Image (cartoon, rainbow, N blue to C red; front, side):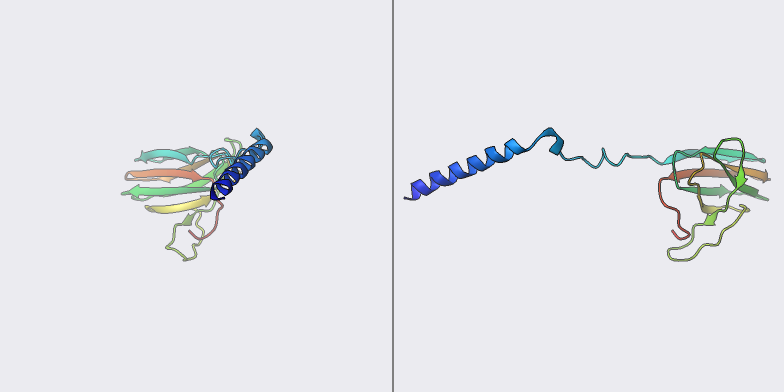
Length: 153
């Protein structure tokens, strides 16, 4: 009797396997995470050092947020962050200091010292840091990321 139940169980499992395989098609295959949604990498500009007034240009590849780190001596620094959607006509955009977690950040329209900022660059194809005054060297590093912009980090 036990032998008969064992044979019946094996036949039942085999029939279920065949039946389920008949209903699966190639369209039922799982889409893996790396295929959908499309991966958009961060835009990264290698650090650029200026020791006199000039501009640091950055191409945005669909990012919503851009971070800007200014480091160095940065004596007498005066700079604005400008954005464009055509690469020709630029407008000054607000930047926000990266505050400690949970602290509200107030917008700024210019950079006057070394520090770390973020900006909303959604919809812009290019961004530049326009340095109008500088008497010592500063290094500018920019990164764009496909994130939603908020006033808190």
